[in-house]
Length: 196
Image 1 (cartoon, rainbow, N blue to C red):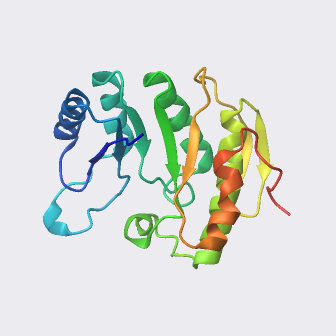
Image 2: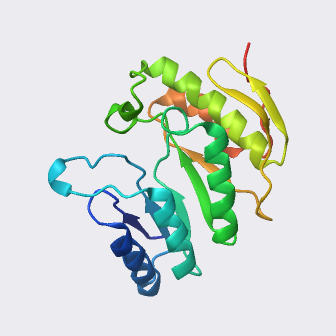
């Protein structure tokens, strides 16, 4: 069955317009809505970059049927994985189970703003793997303390969880990355891969 999606391009429109477009897309019959999650537009001439998570919260309240997805969020630089898990659980609740968390290893254009430098791809993928394990554990309802290779978590727990688990999709490129992240994107409980 073919499904059709509509992209909420945060680089091309402001937050109020994006929420309005989402309502119109649902009325027009689209099946799902994806939102970019960027700090900067691709080109300065695009002129926009609202906070995708606030936009999706608004979208969840003006739509009833369409599925929602981040396209994609990087849980390793601008956002700590525990915070991403909290945001995903909240959107899962607001959308009544229509939200899927799309994750990826990020790009310098959007992650450099925190001033931490830009790691090589191998390091970014290690960070992403560790971040997904943390996110999955929290979305499973665990109380979590972690001393990982890249992230620390101190007695984190999500207090508001949706009835149905938030699904996780991972954007990757290349056969090796597909094999590495396939299990993390599809399993219902996290593998034990935090730290050394």
